[in-house]
Amino acid sequence: MKIVRYHEKGAPEVLTLEEIETPTPADGELLIRIEACGVSYGQTLQRAGRHYPTPITLPHAPGANVSGVVAALGAGVAQGLLGKRVYGQVTSGGYAEFGVGQAAAFIVIPDGVASVDAVAVLSDGVTASLIVRTVGQLQPGQSVFIPAAAGGLGFVAVQLAKLYGAGRVFAAASSSAKRALILDLGADVAIDYTQEGWSKAIIAANDGVGVDLALEMTGGPVFYETLEAVRPGGRVVNYGNASDTDAPINPRVLLRRNLTLSGFMNGANMPYVAQHDRARAEILGLLAEQKIKARHQTYPLAAAVEAHRAIEARSSAGRQIITPFA
Image: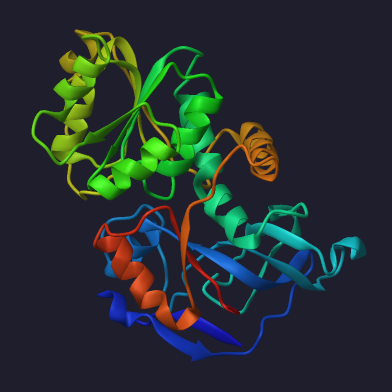
């Protein structure tokens, strides 16, 4: 089978298309014929050798969140899953024609939901839901700020915030085209956060007060300005550090304005297991009911380099997806 791997860290060009043996599912595993695999910013960080909290070993096959058809079953897996179209995580690398993963990590995709749409929405949709509702505790009528709103997590977070009853959604993007996209997705105000003083623009548009909840994933100066965009008693959820810089926090900044700062990362130390499973089922249902729009750009296996370049150049919108058999 064909798979994309890299044997050293570096520029996107270290990604190489290779031929290896198709894996065999072990006990409790599925073999998936992969129809779509999500490409994330975190994968570009790992490939480049920049800071990312999950270590990798070389050679590395990137990609985990996939959708596709169950092609074979390991021992102990229900026979009824064979031939079903599913979404979940492979452990063998998702930029590939086939992959294996624990059967328990997959759910069946309903008819009418395309594989690329399932990956586009579910790859970060569950994380977005946990950030906005579980950790961020967004309540109906409250205001929320969402950065990188045209990105893989952001475009779902904008839609979920509205579905969860947000009074006003302020969403940020770096280009006029991206800001037009997030307005189309339901944001009330689109902010250009490449402009100096953007936090003041949010406050001015929110009747002179900061937002109730702000998401933050950049770190550095953007992190500090995000704090300025939040009202006294408000909340900030940090879920990334795209700038790869330290952002020390003076406790006085939090206590003087009664701010709550939380961190979130979906992974082994994520404590919200029950909420995670409920959110995944909920979001898949919303997608099937066409209450959430999918946004994506697709690439064949041989163009994985281009997908990574687009993310790093900030020219991508929505979820970037590898489609091995397109």
